[in-house]
Image (tube, rainbow, N blue to C red; front, side):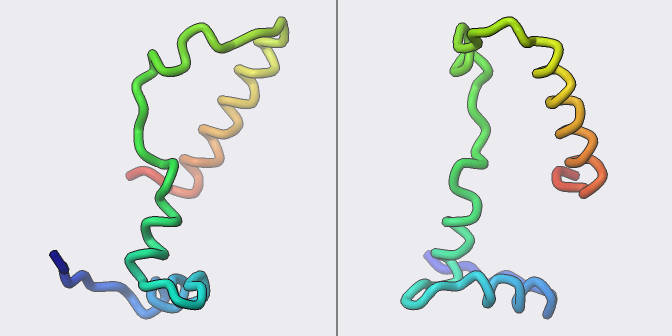
Length: 74
């Protein structure tokens, strides 16, 4: 099924730059969002090994700050 969506000129140009030979715009969008799907937290349960938890928390907080500044998830 095909859906029509509207893009600003800027968004269209950005997608067009990322489009590879033989790719459709749908292919570009799917390639870009691959891996961004949410996963349950339990998928990560028990995976941490190490004693540098303070550094990990600092990095997480830094990443959150950067993401909020960019307005990634509104």
